[in-house]
Image 1: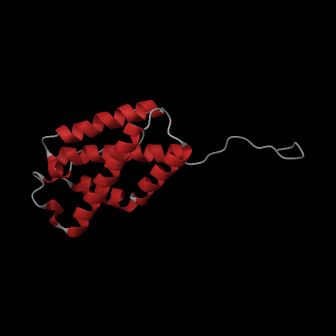
Image 2: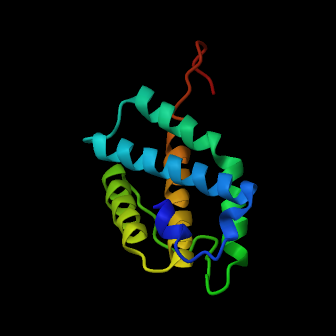
Image 3: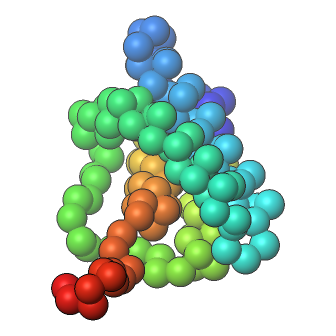
Length: 144
């Protein structure tokens, strides 16, 4: 994946900071790919929390990569609630797998960077699903 992105990047990632952003983003995207591949159905809670923590550890680098994507010529990025995001773990697995392979088959470095950002967005989605949310409450007195 890194070789595809560097192929025609014209030295953009020669800067140590840019190179680090790319390296860490790719490493975590690949770890998530392996995690999804090894998960049959919904992953065990401890595995999911570990992966969510791994994703969380890369936040600063992901946002730096998003900034980089925003200044690259020819790359149009989208924000907001535009695309239909996966709504189940099997959909997330299928979508991530599809985009991951699009990165590997990309013939343009800048397009591969945009696709990598789409992978990051799906990792964020996974992380939000793993975040605890309200299920119910019951008090001893029986009142809310």
